[in-house]
Image 1 (cartoon, rainbow, N blue to C red):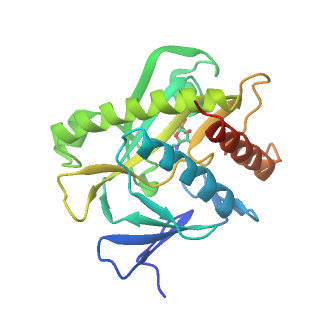
Image 2 (image 1 turned 180 degrees about the vertical axis):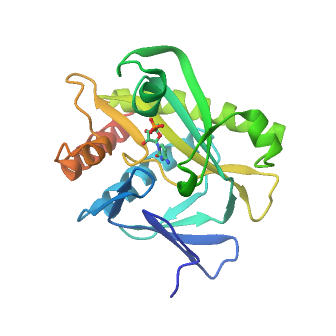
Image 3 (image 1 turned 120 degrees about the vertical axis):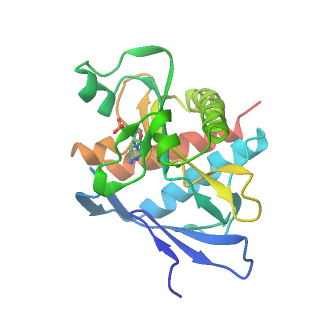
Length: 240
Ligand code: C5P
């Protein structure tokens, strides 16, 4: 069966249900808009497990997502959506492109979370944009943008607390949203939440436990992802 979409880390397939898709997590890893590539045994399974655990928790907390159910170790059934061509980035602590852009050191905590938007386009290098760009490019309506910001901050609150219980500091992360195929007036959280798209630092040691290990050739990439899964599972099992 041919995928209807193949991205850098996932493939999407049709199912018998016109409103649902099968999403498969791949072992491929990319960084720097696809310029750096590698493959890691078990990455698909680890990211699927971490992401499913988080989406299940978010659904329980009332956040609408595309998640329907896990199908296998690396496959998930998701609601079909029309993905918004906007990446929503939430930053709690200075790191990555924020530091490059502002010439500051990483690691200082913001007084409030920063929500920023970029165009989902590797060829352009996912450029940073603002709400006026979104309006003029017709990437989303003003109401949708207001919804994205509110939803992203809600997810941030839930995830900060969750990862803290897992002994991890949520530095920053990327979210993607989509309009439901079944009802385009409804926007849900889509894509995945895993160490591929989040910066997670060990609360005690500050050690990087995310894709920066791959980006910066720090080694132990899958060991860190496995540790994130172990701690996240423990945090879920021991929640109040
Ligand atoms: O690179 P930058 O500092 O802008 O990334 C912010 C956060 O968003 C990081 O956690 C990174 O992993 C994530 N991100 C992503 N996909 C992108 C851009 C950023 O997952 N295309």
